Length: 97
Length: 93
Image (cartoon, rainbow over all chains, first blue to last red; front, side, top):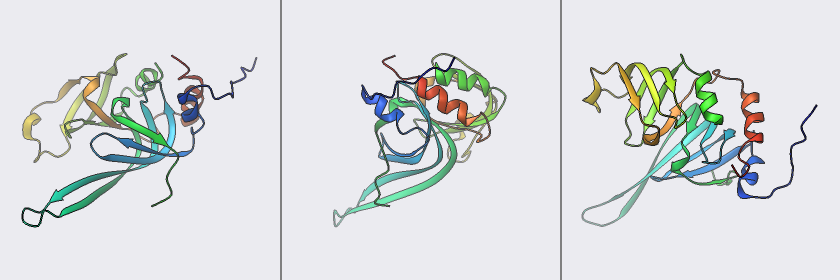
């Protein structure tokens, strides 16, 4: 009665499947990044993430010095649905933060 | 189909929909369709001073393609069911 799940990795989405219930890093459009626990996803890369932190990066340019000032704003959301058309890449978390 | 079913199970709960134009709308999930278009009831805009457009709007239809995020209740649905469903999905569909 039990259905055996195919454990072979055949296509890119299978690689994401390996990360279910794990923490992942997601790069989105509009200079946004998410880190959270992957609960579900589909072929459009719609996803549900838990305990997620969003980081939005902005660059301001000083009118006189033309110096670039990079700012980030962060916020935490306990449970979030992300629409797939905004997703650029998905990866295990990069341990720089 | 996975998320269509998930949202159907969530009807009646309070969610916050954040759109791609940065507008955030809080309301009760009334209905959803296969395109993940959303109908919300009893809506209020999250940052009312910044977005006064919809002060008098109480119910709205949101096209699925303009949604960036939906903030969900953490206890909305069984997480293990989600994990199992996701493991079955996304296979050359």
